[in-house]
Length: 383
Ligand SMILES: NC(=O)c1ccc[n+]([C@@H]2O[C@H](COP(=O)([O-])OP(=O)(O)OC[C@H]3O[C@@H](n4cnc5c(N)ncnc54)[C@H](OP(=O)(O)O)[C@@H]3O)[C@@H](O)[C@H]2O)c1
Image 1: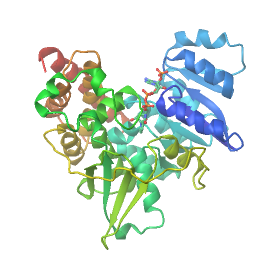
Image 2: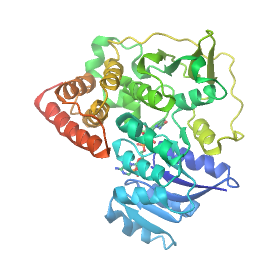
Image 3: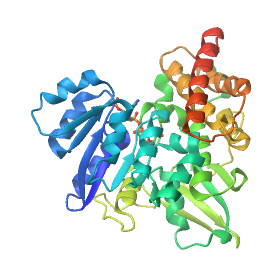
């Protein structure tokens, strides 16, 4: 029986993880849950899965949990999430908090020698060197939950690194693939939240519409698979049937295909090295869209910004992520236009004085600086 801790249990990935666990009660036991502010859903999860430890974002939320009258320990804030990740009995931590807030609990999990099923791509985007160093030092397994990286992880099993030529990440292109570029200015949050193939949390859905999510995934792939940004290609694949591919030196391209359901990559990470039987109807390839296209960089400037931030290195990717978090938040509140997201991030990056990342403090300082700077830019300009 594998003991599981879920950080971000009330989110899209957290809920799907609990569904996988519900379908495999003989394999997995939920030991701890960490959530933000969705106490209603968290209470239902506690009643069903009976964890030993529960953490929430704010201390004030704990009162509500006590009313359940069940026997579990509690914590709150960053420390609470870290404690959830490190308690005895946890073998694997599913890191699925959204944004930079996931970094410290993720590092705590690794330092406590817990295997990591990583959905929180921001940890690798902003602190890839630190996270991978800790993974090596503590000899834990790092299993990607992002569908593209899970695909590549599966494709590369049994291959020699020296035979790999490049990684090819697929992107659906989001809801605006065919929308005239001149109308991008007027895109509303409602339109941007309407992703054509995947159901996800709000931030990643907007990041998918701008392709910043793909930019983050390029950075994530470089850290996970130890390749350079030049060795990662992105192709638009509107059907999202091929989750990603690897090209080898002999010209062969190997891909992983399947449904657009995150329970697939989650089950793969939880069950690794075994594969868990799927409760879903078999995936029918007949009639599936297998078209691929190049990315139009004028339509998706965020992808280039992400690749440039990775090439620049140091604190630049942390600034990229923080500026994006702020810009996406402002867009969702109607305070920034859709095209203003990329402009805000570009301007924040251009103002940043890059530092090397020697420890987590360097990342956190860059993150705080970028959030303030992005907010100033949004207030000053009418993007
Ligand atoms: N959704 C997908 O299909 C998908 C695919 C690949 C990768 N990912 C990655 O997985 C992560 C989670 O994505 P998601 O779509 O599941 O996001 P989501 O639906 O917005 O859920 C985010 C979770 O994080 C919690 N949370 C937010 N801020 C927090 C904080 N400061 N401290 C502690 N907990 C906090 C939320 O709690 P409350 O809701 O209780 O406030 C919720 O449980 C992201 O890094 C995303 O890029 C997601």
